[in-house]
Every structure is written in C-alpha cells, then in structure tokens.
Length: 589
Image (cartoon, rainbow, N blue to C red; front, side, top):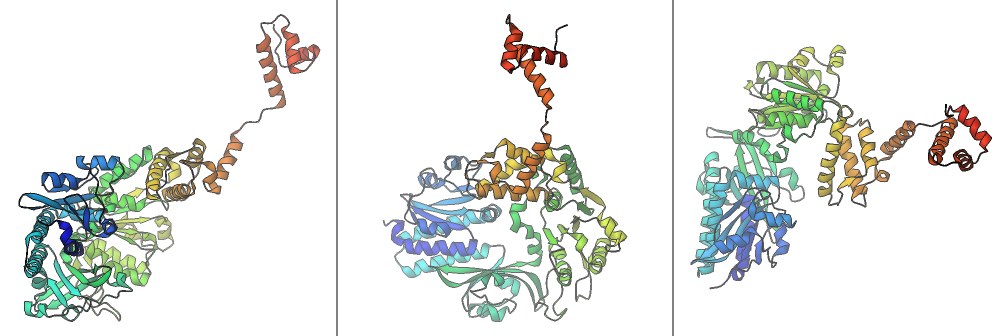
C-alpha cells in the first residue's frame, strides 16, 4: 500500500479547500510524523518532522481523535508549552486509518482567539467533518479510478457545506457559481437550474465584484434582498480561494440579520474582559469595581466619567460581560471620531433611497446591531444637539427613528455613555441637553485618575512589562528600584494609557533585562531628579562639626589620653577642642 506522500498533491488541495471553507489552518502528517501538506505557516514546513511530544504522535499511535480547546490547560500540551515550542491556542486532530493501520494524522490548528472560537463553537460539526475528511484521504490511498476519487471529494465537501449553519456559495473569479449549499438556495429561493449555470453578480446584484487591488474594501458588507415575499437583511463576507499563490475564486457566506446581530461581538473575543481582569488593589479602585458590578445587574443607563486614559471603555465592556446581555453584542461608537453628518446614519442606519448616495439595501445602524446587547457611546460630550434629541427619544421611547423609514423600530438596547468632559458645565453653557444628561446619569460611575491610585501602579507596571516583553520579543523581566520610584511618584496626566506608552517605549529602548533610569522619557526622569534634590536635607556647618566631634569622642572614650587623641584626629589643638565641647554642650557635668 502506498503512503500519503504518494498522493501529497491531492492532499494539499484538500487542505487548501478546507481552509477556504473553515478559515482554520490545516496540516497533515504521514506515519513518520513528517508534514506532507499544510496551509498558512505550515506551507514552509512541509517535509519537516513534527515534535515527538505533540498530540499528533498520540493520535497516530493510539488511533484516537484528539480535541484540545485550551492548550494551556491540556496535559498533552504541557511538555511542548514548557519547552516554549507550542504557539497553538487549540487544535483537533484525527488519525487517517485504513484497514486498521494509521497512515497519518489530519489536524486543524488555531493560532488566534478567532480561530479558537470557531473550533470551540462548532466542535461537534468540525469533529464530524474532520473524520469524513480523514476517510476521504484514506479512500484516496485505495481508490483506482480518478473520477470516483473526484466525485467522492465533491460529495464530502457538499455534506460539509450542507451541514453549515449559514448560506455559502463558491464562485470563480468572474462570478460563475461553482458550489453552493442548501441553505444558500433556500434563503434566496433560487432554483437549482439557475444556480448551476448562474453568475452571482447577476443573481445577487447587491454584491460588489471584488477588486484584487482593493480587496479589503469588498470583503464584507450588508445586504438587503427582496424577491417573491423574501425580505432578508444581513451581512455577507467574501474570502479568497488561493491555490499555489494564484487567485482561483471566492467563497461567500451570508448571515441573516437576526444571526448577524446575535453573533456580532464574537468577532472581538479578545475583548471578553471582566472586572477581574482590571488590575487594582487600591481601595478607591476596588470600590469603583464593586459599584460597576452592581451596575451590571441593571438595565439602566450608565454614565462613566473620568480623565482620558482611565479605562472608560474597559469598564463599559466589563459591565456588559457581567450582565444578562453578555451573549449579545457590545457595540462601541466614538462620537468624537465620526463627523456629525455621518454619525446619525452610523447610529440609526437608513433605508434604501433615503438620500442621494445611500447604499442599495440601506444600512444597519449600530443600535440595530446592538439589539438585546449594549451600545457604548464614548465621548458623548461631543455629540451635536440635533443628535442628542434623537438619542433622547431612543432612551425614552425605546424606538428607533431610522432615516428614510416610514415607521419606527422597537429596540431593546442598554446604553452606556462615557466622557472626559464636565457635562454639568456643558449643560450650563447650553452645549448639552439637560434632559438627556439626567437620562444618561441614572447610574454614574466616576473612574479615579492614576495619580489617586498609586498603590496600583507597581501591579500595572509588572503586568505591562510581561505583556509588552512577550509582544516585542524582548527579555525584560523588571526594572531598577529608582525607575519604579520615578514612575510611582509621577503625576500621570495621561493615566493608564500614558503608563502603557512609557512601558512599551522603555522595553523597545532597553538593551538589558532590567529597565534603567537612563532610558525612560526625560520628563519623568528630570522630575525624579528634581524631587530627589528637594527631599535631601542640607546640614549646617555647625551641625556637621558637632557630629564629627561626637564621633571622635565615642571612638577614643576608653583611652587614657582621650581628649588628646580626639584633638589630634580632628586636626585642632586641645584648647580649641575644649572650647568647642563647651560650645556644643558636650562637657561632662
């Protein structure tokens, strides 16, 4: 029987097809643990042997499927992790067997949180699919008829596509449809005969033909589809199919509006922050965190105030993740970063034809996307009075007045707002609506500046050194005491964000494993030296003289000619010594 290396070209095609559908890196090894196919970083490692400590070896020897959703906690990964060899977040590997013998292993590897979430959220389907793909490879070892092999591969891929919980279609570079799943056919209600010879850009004209040069602009978008009583809204994503570094076509997946809204925040798994992740031991910060935890159990609006860099969005995300809405979207909008004429459509969306230049199918607003979740309105103090009025209506009526719509949309969204401005002053000056101010300030949460929580600074420093050392691949493990003192005593006008900037800069500049005073920014260094000079006391000459006389007296007090020895040590005559003893009241009574 031939080994896997004899059909490695076909196996490589399967790996690339799996990647295009799953968006997870694929690697395949043979019975000698030699990598014969792979995607992503594994392309350059084809022909190399995998580690003897790997899950692949266990999978091969015991002929069992291995599922690892957290490499840091899995016993199989401990040896690799201790050796610093493993950078994987999660993996699923399946033995490729035929007639009771294992010819190799097929694996899906996650290198980031997004890929890891795909594995954990679709474990049952992926395990089932991986087993079928392993069977497909096994069958290729045995099959004699190439036509049968291609039909079998096609059938396996069709099974996968039809088992996916979203509509999927693959096309060539010109848009001609190659494959599609049942859900795609059903939600758009298009007959098979039209799909089999159809062009996606003609059948679904809301999809813009991707430009190779500007692909990033076209790889995602919203859609509105109305045909034969089908009224769909949602999001579509386009992925490139690249084989041997050549673009062959695209895979497009579609998520209906209700699914898009429900899963919106899964894109940002790295932001699954909780209050426990906010580093602090200071009394004022612990009290603030406790108040935030209480606020998370309510649906009332929260107004977070504090200086720039104190972590207002961090607290907003933590409040959301501790709430009953944590399974629904957290949508952040910076009101100061978006021009006023665009912010309205960004927040509330618009219908098709609402104004000149409006997108076909309209646009989902952030409030719609945040349905049942939380919307975070950062820099709320920069919102115009016009939009303040629209926001007030949303808060009061729980209805969304979408641009160009003939009717309002009921929404269920929790609002958290934040600002570094004094809203009370803005209200007095007529720059902020008083009624909106009190609607937002149901639960006020004021974040203390870093200078008022100095007990937290050493903890933050140690955490940031570890984080940025890993990120920058530097071997920095700490800092010298005078640097720590300088950082703790500094006033930190930019708060935690400024501290992050300083630590990252210092680690970049460091040439040793300890941060030293000479590499920290001058404004902090000079402030440290100035404070040190002011703290040092200057003694008078008389005090210094008295101190030296006492020191000499103590040294020679047990000698017979003690006064003579003291005068000699001080370089003065005995008569002068006696005068000074009397002057400083050091004469024995």
